[in-house]
Figure 1 (cartoon, rainbow, N blue to C red):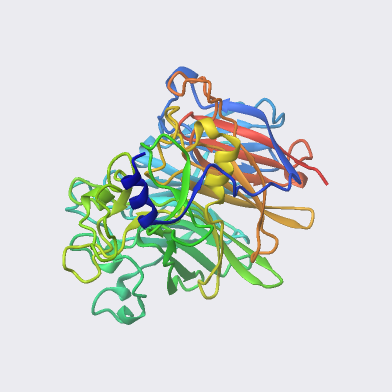
Figure 2 (cartoon, one colour):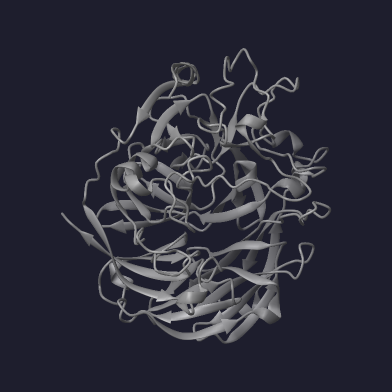
Length: 531
């Protein structure tokens, strides 16, 4: 590296940390061991087809219900022997819409989220038995992306994302459908929590926090908000819904189907100690450093839990952005005109060999409207976070720990993608990309299991104390010597994770189930407690 380049790198960064010297040491109190895998079809045809996405569990029958988006089926797997999952049947949903996105189970009832035949056609929730028999169907909002039962089983909720069509000429409103089923799903009634009151001129327009991103072309607030994932309080009264592209969480009163608050999540400052990231893929090395960059959390999955200290939300901060033919916010940092006073002498830094290819959003950062960017924002925080469920205040963020851990354990495969083995290939775009999260209680501790969409695997943290979570272990059932496209690389692209407590599992042990979208495999892990 030339001396001039090195000097400019130092100007742009505060502290450069090469390699993984700051990786936290796992406590090792849990061990995750893959014991059984089911390929959702012919292994040669599974690659990148979305054959295994979301998974739910019926404890009395020891059955998994796996969303197979490629075939528009729910694949029912018997894991009576968790080392040998067996297909019971595949239930088709072709006749109900244009695809299935999510599944949930409560007692002997299975709910499936089905999207409409077009973006301007409402979706539905189809209820089936544990054997796959049709029971009932109700209409919900546009593009139901996630379905969940309330803990008491009285309600089913869907996060209706309402994404636009590709040329952005149609942009349905996002919403949350609340289905009251009581003791009989066939008598279900549907209410819808909407965001129209937050539109300009609406009754609650002044309640929309300034930090909520409303930026789709010609979109109202209700059109722009895109519900993604739902967590529900233990008492079944309140839903917390990630509005991913909007960098916010909606709080909803379930009984009245009312949005009670929208919480803006703010941004992560990557210039702070412990908040580093590897921002370049063409430098040929692991370079986890502090940069004058801000990260939008843009969470996908969300989970809820309570402690003696209060109620908390756990988010996987994936960082999904908008990219359509009619509108895209995606850009590279070297496409931006950076304010020369804030980013002095950055020309060489923005070369492809530095971080010139870093993917950023062009929808934020030009704070004075003069065409120069005073701040640079990227999608995602490369972390998981814990938030106060009442105030929305950030309680904990894992900082740069995920990348530090991966660098220490898999240095030759650091930040590789889920469809090919290429060192550092995702460093310019969301890194490991945390997407899925589920919680589990083992003994007297609460653990978070966070699925990493790109390099794969699951990070495990003890979050019993939400103020100071502790890294436990990282498990990755990927074979980096294998060929992803040929189906020899094992698990790729975790999309859904599910914790099964020992008292509900078929072998009396705590289990974790991971549905892997790219490899089309559903894998069961044994969780061993080492203390």
